[in-house]
Amino acid sequence: MTFSGEFLAIIPLPFDIPLLYDLALLFLLLIIGIVIIILIAKVLLFILPAGIIALVVWFLTGSLFWAGVAFLVVALVSLLRR
Image 1 (cartoon, rainbow, N blue to C red):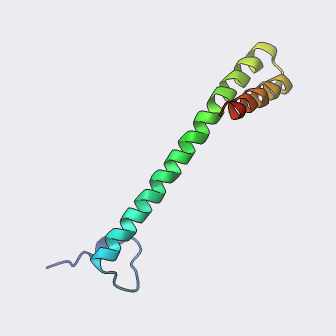
Image 2 (cartoon, helix red, strand yellow):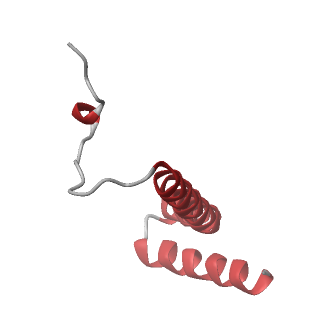
Image 3 (cartoon, rainbow, N blue to C red):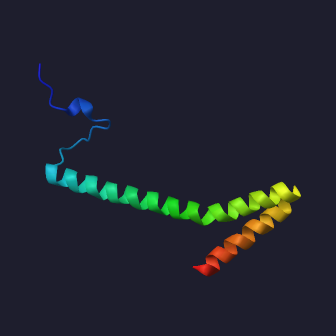
């Protein structure tokens, strides 16, 4: 009993893609995935300091208003620094 490998496809395509196009599509999707991961990491690194400061202010004051103000101030300073 031999298998052609088609049973491994999660979403079988209705047409046959040559190997070169398959590899090109793989690299394109890989690059898109890496770019998305880098963008998510940059956003997290931008929000993290402001979030930590806001959390400290909230622990010290108990006020969500002042925590929000601290978050916005630190986020603005981070934006202006870049």
